[in-house]
Length: 619
Image (tube, rainbow, N blue to C red):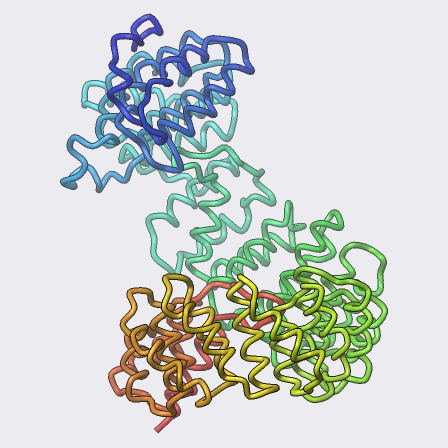
């Protein structure tokens, strides 16, 4: 260890941390010996400099002996400083043999920690449980590197904690640390539930799905709902609950079994319902089971915020059910007619379930998201919903609410023309102007006021608005010169060309004069630009020859890959070499794309699967 008096012996200005030269590290370490507030601020600063978002630096290792001294001699914060040492030294044991390990900052940190560890071992017997728990994590962080002469002392101390500590969580921690030292301890039948749960977690970590029934049974019986909740993190900053959730979502059958048991036991802190939701997010075709569990969890939610969270999850997944059950819809209706904060997500889910009762309730509670859901699922109700959309827009809806309301007109086709006055006002006032311009173009109603407003909008500096307005103006007037004036400089620049290319869709072959600007973009270094250029090239020329090779190269389980796949579907061509990839998209039991839906759109993974199946059915 090194005391603050030795800080000046280190050339800190020659070392670096997250923000450059580490000359401020001595001041931060000295502050650890000041009052509690100053020490807390110093710890926060050290986490932001010598350990920044999981990265360590060449100034990190020289700080270790000083941090170890502060653990023993600075007032308070012992547990936090021990945890900092554990976090700094955290590493994958397999990385020790990699070429980058030797001489790297993590190797240097671990070497320094092993040197000071003998002085820190008394912390394993500290009177404060938080200090004992943090000390366990400190020794566990370097379990694979501790010299043999010290290893026996560490294991002896951990054995004592496992056998005798009065705090169950400390005994469970000691079990984890012993496991990292290679000591396998059979503890699934231990008298303490915390220890049994930890033993099961270790068993899961050593297993591959499907998990053994005895491990699943222990987790179901002794999980967070019955065995206590433990949010004390390990050196990788994950808590036991987070590790358990991660492991259970690897095996959906086991995970749903555990979630059902936890929910039946009261869904303590919503752990069971959160686990069910995580499984829906990671696995396909489990939505019906998850929704049944969320329905069972609703009565256990202790407050409106918890109920709202569960109902929002129901709303997120109910679209996946071909025919939502009567019990589910009746439960949603019961929550939707209340005046509580949970009424809105319940009504959103009810609308997405296609339950006719939702329509009347939406008319009484006309939020933008609710109106959009009703418009999507009840497109025949234009006579009821369009007046509500008009009224909300006329009342001054702005930002995302205005955008959602304008987009909600799309399912109504020609009937949406009734909202022309409100769309014109949106364009004039700049509220949802981009989507209003596009809707005016789609509506096809030409008046002098509309064309003048659209032309004026093409003269601004916002490329998204100018391109949308130029295309809409062309749809109404046939004016191609304005389109060329707006698009040519944008397509030849270094900006986000793909945003602008997508605006050309309504023009079709009329955009042919822009081909000299589009064709070079087929070889652009940016994936999104190549994709949009290929899609536009096919729409304009009607020939897939140039587009298909570009799109095939981009297809993948990514957002741009999905867009390329949809553009490829429009060409009608499916190269034989793409079929294995399409089968993997169609048949994967895991979700390949996460949920990035906005305003009630289709889940990206559902789109990926559906488009892949459509293409596989193409001759």
